Every structure is written in structure tokens, then in C-alpha cells.
Image (cartoon, one colour):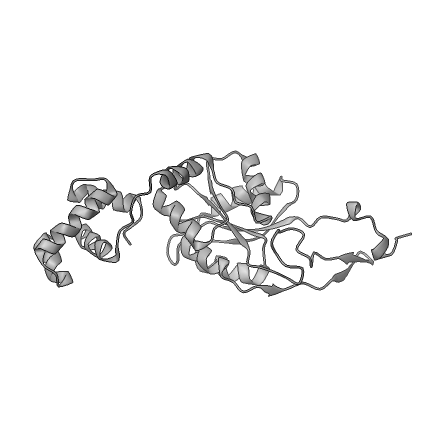
Length: 255
């Protein structure tokens, strides 16, 4: 005889698996992740997206607990912008308190058991866990600023990935060791960011323009261009125009 819902032992209440949405523009990578995550207890892949726009749409429609997000997604918006949009999804209404399944009432997870910090009357936006090969300061900073809960490198062991997914579902941050090292290094000796004007000049520099041409394009004097270039070199830790462009591309400061 099945006891009334109010008399059931909470210790035996089924725990809902962590629902994951995959986003990677490589079908082979998605297939590999799907096979890998299918072997993990308590993790369920509920959808796949091949680009940023599709990831945002599926996140809004499927309400996953975690979106596993690559940063480089080919055409369209990148993983950073997709993360920003997913993190900004409006809080949704809680699912119904119960549904009929296998001939008996099964309590649904309206209290948000699978994710800490989600209210008892609704769930917040999905947590985004970045999974990428890129570990530059610029990528890490942009992802965190966009709202990513964690940042993991694809070189991690499967067990680390499983643990990070469960942590992200609970609202806990996880960083790969190299990423954590870079974050701590930035905190200990932060490097000033480039101003909008410096980014403008850097963009013109990448086009191969001379100081005079940059001055004409931006309606400033050559002396001002030289002053800004000196500051750009200092901030990027370089001493040549080619070096500035190279580091800017590495740190993804250029479009």
C-alpha cells in the first residue's frame, strides 16, 4: 500500500536528475558529450544546440538546470553573448506541484531541490557552465561578467566535469585549476583595462593604418594617437605595433 504523500519518508523521495542542455557548434563534440554524460548518475541531457541563438531559444523552452556552453560557436552570437542572454532569462513560474505518473502522484520539484538559491515559488534562469579550450584572461573575464557560474577546460577528466555540472546546478562556482590560477593572478596584480578610445585606436592599428591615418580616421591629433599607443603598449605588456595586435587577438579584444 502506498502511503499518503504527507506520510512518505523524505529520505526515499526520488531526486530529480540535473537537466543539461549542450551547446557546441561541432556535432562530433556534442555526440561525445552526450555519450559521456549518459554514463553519469543523476545527469540527464535534455537538448542540444549547435549555435548561440539556438541555445538561448532552447534554454527558454526547455528550462534546463545547467547549460554546458562552448565559447566559439561559428557564425551568429558567440558563447559569451549566449551566456549573457541565458543568464538574463526571466524567472519562470514553478511547475505544477504534482503530476500523474505510473498510476500514482509524484511530487514535482516545485521547491527547486536541484538548485540552491531558487525560490520555492519559481526557478531562476539556468546556470551556465562554460566548457572550452580557451583560457585567456579576456575570455575568462568576459564569461564571468556575462553571468557564467563556472568555467571548465575541455582537458578536464570526466569526473571533474560531472562534479562541476552538479555544482553548477546547485549554484556553486567551479573553475578549472589553470583558470583559477589566472583569476588569482589577476586579483594579485590586476592590469588596467583598455579605454574605449584605446580600443578604437587598437582596431585601427589592426587594419594596418599609420599614426597619421588613425588620427584622420578618429579626428584626433597624431600626438594624441602616440600617447594612446604608449598606454596601450604598457597595458598589453608589449613594445611594438605588431605585438599589440597579436596580444589583442590572443585576448580577443578585437572583433
